[in-house]
Image (cartoon, rainbow over all chains, first blue to last red):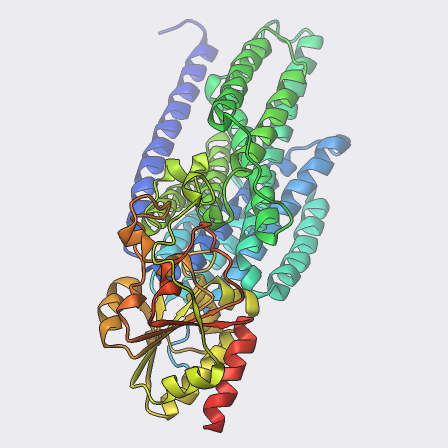
Length: 117
Length: 481
């Protein structure tokens, strides 16, 4: 193909990069359908807890904050500060979201006279 | 044996599947709570994987102490905030946490951009590269995470303030045009920025410009929207943050971020549309801020009659000797924290052999399902809460309807008056019942800012006062009879 072996490697990497992006796009489209399907048949009584639960799930942005922290140089204090803040608020989103949702759902008990009060 | 390089992928896979299964379980009342725990478990696995695993196997991430300290602190503070908040204040809490997610996404974009350009400018200074080009996909992922995250953060904070009552509605003339101009300016700036980067100009001024305009957009996006429409906006901002998280998934080829983000993005959008439908408004209509108090304000008080005030004693007698009572809760019940005493009244009447049910309008309160959550808090049985479609046929056979702090959701103008701003909204048809009692603090109009003909109906009596105080009176009167 090419007399430069590095160019070939570059092409192979491009190819995998491309495959990876394509599979991500498949994922996006399928997840859109899954999301629509999951919500369409939900009684309106559960809308608030569901919104809150979804709110907790997008806290997955925390993973991104952790990843970006992983390659900040220890001397780059500005980035470290911003990254730590990103982890902090991301965790707030996750923890707060799940705990609030749990508190809401705790109240949907089958038996009206369940003891926890 | 599982090769060690697959550990992280497997953990992320478990996380992704847990999100889908969890959200699915949250869609049914019986399994909802477990579903939340399943999703939380998935999140814990994914976070563990990000901290302790990489493509080679076990590996503790760099800057570990900072990360763990931040996680620990946020866990303590987040748990405290979420545990202490009043049930009535849940909507603003959700909004605030949503904003935190948006901020996190925006910060990631800032750091990522700083990192990419610092690397490139370092290399060009060393003469290692002569020209730099950032792939358009990478730039798009970073900048859209930045824009959407920032809008979501700014908007959520405003929504939080509005629900708190700290911030009022504020509308500019030509609002839509201004919004469109700001949005166009953001996009134009991003295009110019990308051009500048690829010609070796790494100055951050474009970048700060984009952040500033995104903040402005978030503010003016939420400012004009009326308080009654806040749930729709929060749900929409919720899906924005989902999309912002998904851009991170593209940037890092991280499937758990991508799946979680897109899932919330699409589920949140559908939820928004469903909420709009429940109010019979189009999403566009809500966003432009055409909510109540606007043009059709001078609504007809056609009957011209006067309202009839009733005493707690009379209402107590009416209810005690009724065979069927339906309670219609609204925001007034939430504000007055009257859900517990309301349940007490229900028990008391049930002991007297009265059939008591609750009629739940999909948008009663400030969020869909708000009333259910509140009443469930005071242990009202789940099957006593009847949704609008099912209860409307029952009003004709009902002796007494007790409207507790609800207004627009029982306004007959929605059916009869085409000029009314709420015309077309499905309502609870309480005027079919034999007697109606409305518990209300004053004759002030509801959120939509329109007068309610129901109050002038001869069948309708008004019991003025705080919902909790009024119901407590009713409880005492029923006991005394």
